[in-house]
Image 1 (tube, one colour):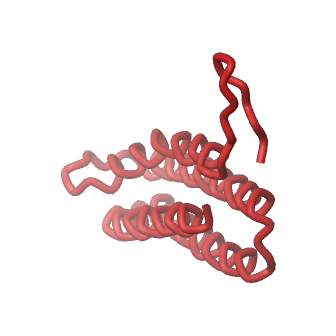
Image 2 (image 1 turned 30 degrees about the vertical axis):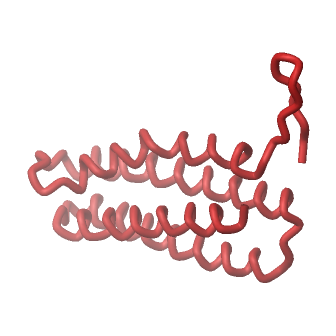
Length: 133
């Protein structure tokens, strides 16, 4: 744990401080995905939807991976957490791949389904990291 000095008062930097920024940086990307998954959203062209989905899911995956490494480093958690998080990240990556494929195929019904799954898995990742704090 690092200690920051703010206005002359020490502040212990918690795991939540370290990972909260990662979760916050995911919000704009999650909003993009929610707009694409909306039932009343106008369907963009498949190549544009595919690019937006790929960019947003890649950014979220990257933030989740970095946050997971920071939780492991801060808590000294052993192999159990690493394996559990690795499985969660693999499921999240698979959902991202499914969403990108559905967008590229122009299958917006499947895209909405995959994006909802991706969002649920993303929420689960943050819950796991919150519990580890």
